[in-house]
Image (tube, rainbow, N blue to C red):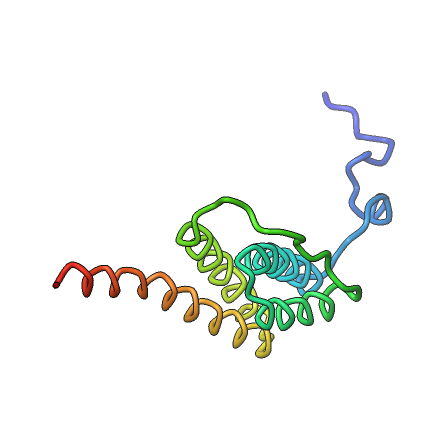
Amino acid sequence: MYEPIRTKSVHTPADHADDFPHRSREEELDIQLAGHLAALLAVTDELGIGEAGDRIAEQVARLRGAPPARHAGRTDAPASALHRRAHALAGRALVVAASRADTAAAILAAERMDAHTAALAAPAASARLVGAH
């Protein structure tokens, strides 16, 4: 009733294994981590935090094999918004660094999260003190 298939399927994976590039999980995580750190670097440069930016740039260069582009100037964005953005980016970097067991990047991301949390808390604390007078 049914005639057997006489030709190979075009969907046979072995025949098309070399048609597109494959990356390992580690390579994908490296790319993700470098992207999160590069975004964090842009915000850090925008905030004018040079030493932290240099440390982040070292990690991006290590992951990408080339130095990253640095942000040239500051914008009119409020510092609190930039600190919140940097905190979120550092959190993403921390998750990826932990999943690829990159201790140096994880420590750096955690330190940046702490620094941005402290920067966000400082204006609130000073506002409470000013209002107390």
